[in-house]
Image (tube, rainbow, N blue to C red; front, side, top):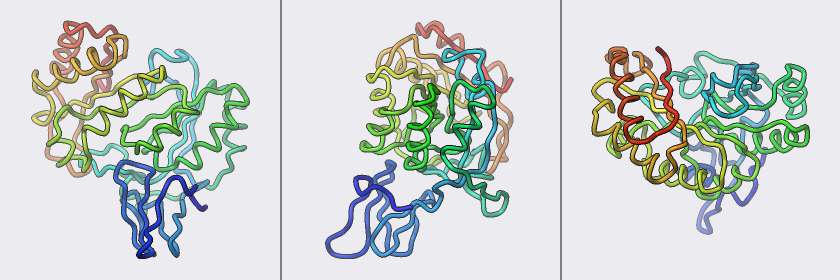
Length: 290
């Protein structure tokens, strides 16, 4: 499907174009894909080759997203796609985000069918999750607008690596976010995730300023982002730049993908992270994968 022209820019000198869906701002030559491997330059136009194709469909408890303070106790209809705009070495869903050509096959589905399924499963919301939803903006937007007409709420479970243009568009139809704030280290984001921390922090502030429901997940990895100093910095950012009422989910990491050499996060590390967060004034702190 042809991507809306406001989400990419053509070059006046060649058929290379700049995708502006996410913060990578990929410059894509004719016949090539961006980092997410979902958007292709065909004769100087940007096409979303994953439109209407998903990897997974499932009614889930909303707490699984995790969202503990939004429609608590209800089910959400979870949709996953393929690809990602980050290259995290510890990705827990790499089978659909990075190496889907080896593991997964796509399911074709219409926006109307997703909405009907959500209603039939008695879900109160639709969650774009499992892989990064930003890269499927055209499909998630159309589906979400149909869902909102049926009084369904819309959730994005995201890494927060949206372009300035797309975050404004996403804010028009998403009701709640869980953003994965992976670290407070620019070095970690650059080397482990292939991304820019400042973009995520700015998008978090923008989402919060818009008054959207927001919860944050921080996956704690031994010897990477588990220091007291880093956890304190994360809590200070949430308390000072967002609000102490924003829930934080500290989550335990396990060896996975290209980080098979790490050991499972010590449970004591998560308990200490919770102690730090509460001391910093964070009002809602939750622990995951324990």
